[in-house]
Length: 126
Image (tube, rainbow, N blue to C red; front, side, top):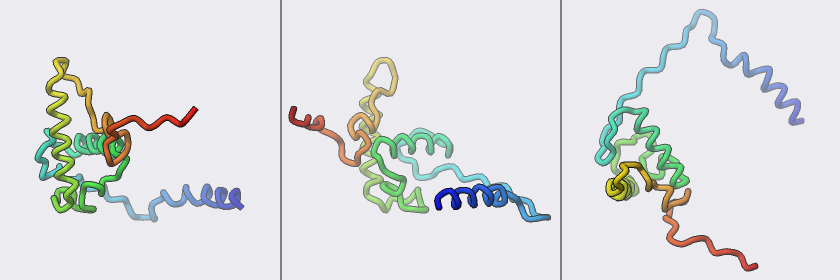
């Protein structure tokens, strides 16, 4: 059964990408640059997206964990203010290293979890 479904999808996929005769796709309108940035020192959408991907990976979450869905500039979600404090803390720690490298990230403590890991996982009994 799975083979039949896969075969049907393979047949339909090339058709789904074709435009109807006489119509052209309209180019996507450019997305505006982010607003309401209080801690991040970036100005373009690609820079913010790249940074946000590191946050979501470090905490194992999606954007709506800190942001209001569809309104990323909104401050209604209280986790957004917590994130700002954490970003500031990480910037302050990294600023104290003489080599200027980013040695501490969200993942340093969170390890893909919303709550920071404050101790190593217990080892199973031998």
